[in-house]
Amino acid sequence: MNTTIIFTIATLAILGLLLAIVLYIVAQKFKVEEDPRIDTVESLLPGANCGGCGKAGCRAFAESAVKEGLGSIHCPVGGNPVMQKIAEALGQTIEAKDPQVAVVRCSGSCDKRKKTTVYDGLATCATIASLYGGDTDCRFGCLGRGDCEAVCKFDAIKINPNTGLPEVDEEKCTACGACVKACPKQIIELRNKGPKGRRVYVACRNQDKGAVARKACLAACIGCGKCAKTCPFEAITVENFLAYIDYTKCRMCRKCVVECPTGAIHEVNFPPRPAVQAPKPEEKKVEIPVQKTE
Image 1: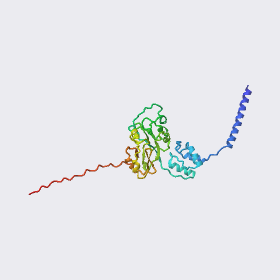
Image 2 (image 1 turned 180 degrees about the horizontal axis):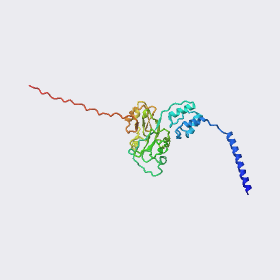
Image 3 (image 1 turned 90 degrees about the vertical axis):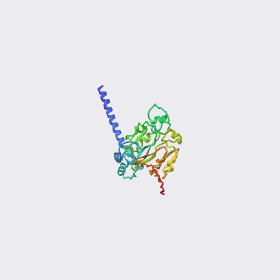
Image 4 (image 1 turned 180 degrees about the vertical axis):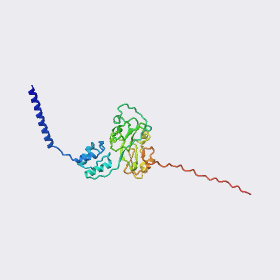
């Protein structure tokens, strides 16, 4: 009995050793040498693995940068400083990109949109969007369940409990685009931060006709076109009863903000407008009759 056990153990040990040798030989024969620059590029990246560059993660970004070149790929978290270091490490050149930030294109706060439906199911925007239009008559607006907040790795977007709308902390936002992908209503957009962080945009996605949109939300764009007519730079277009401002053309004169009858166009980080003083009433001259003396 003891001899049989010893023989079995010895056989298994020899077989295992032979298989290990075979595997080692095969691994060496088919081994693919990895470019050491991949590790270098990965070490320069912030390690967020957010997917904002369009790749699966920082490792995938590094592999693509080394094998295919930087091209149009960009790390939004690291921004231009990190991209410049990567370009220098790879001996390539890149063009600096304007910093971007997530913008919420919805003004339909709780006081602007009346609730018409009560939902008691799974509280996610994706679920609600797949079942019906939302709790209000505006089928284009924010659903307020925080899918954008849940996917943000930088704690840059929060649902305001008072308004029911997401708010972006532009100091924390890296423009990774995770919230953009998570929003089933497509109300979140990446836009250039603009000089001094100033930007002008239409905070609405409603594509209903004016009367219908206005009834659903007091702050909705009604597609009146007044903003487009007043813009001297042709930066505003109106399609499907909805205005849109092209930030590459906008010179931020803000004439459209004043012209919008519903307040759907927002201006961010501008200094307060000077107070408009009421014109002074004209002084009336009182003529005092002169008495003639005889």
